[in-house]
Each structure stands twice: as C-alpha cells, then as structure tokens.
Length: 83
Image 1 (cartoon, rainbow, N blue to C red):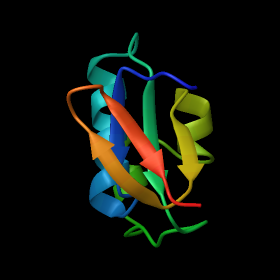
Image 2: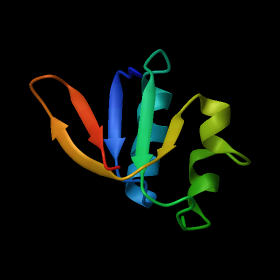
Image 3: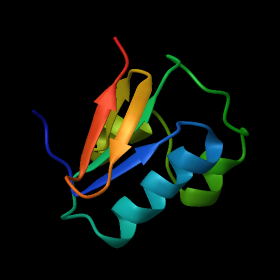
C-alpha cells in the first residue's frame, strides 16, 4: 500500500494546479494525484504563470496514478481503486 500526505482525486487543470501549488508551498509533503485518464488538457498559459515547463509533476516530485477511484474511506484515510 502506498502512502501520501495529500491525495487529490481528479487530474483536470484544477486538480493538477492544486497539486503544483501545494507542492510549492509545502515541498516536504508527498502529493499524489489520481486520475482515470492518461493525459488531461491544461490551458497553455498555466505553466508560464507558475514559472514551470517540461514534465512539471515528475520534476516536482508529484506522483500521478492513472486509475479509477471506486471509494474513499475518510476514517481509515484510504482510497479504493476500481478493478
């Protein structure tokens, strides 16, 4: 089982930019983004606004998992993936 300090479910532009912003403010945190598609269109100006180019998430240490989430258990702090 993998562990993360913050898990963001949804890898659209909002989810990805939330991950980038959080990582910039708290670089010590392990951040994971879970999305069910391989690539998501992101408005082309966003990397320039944040001053980042290239493989942003890999360079920042943000893990991207491509899976569909079936359930979230907040009491146990776990995410269950669909099969």
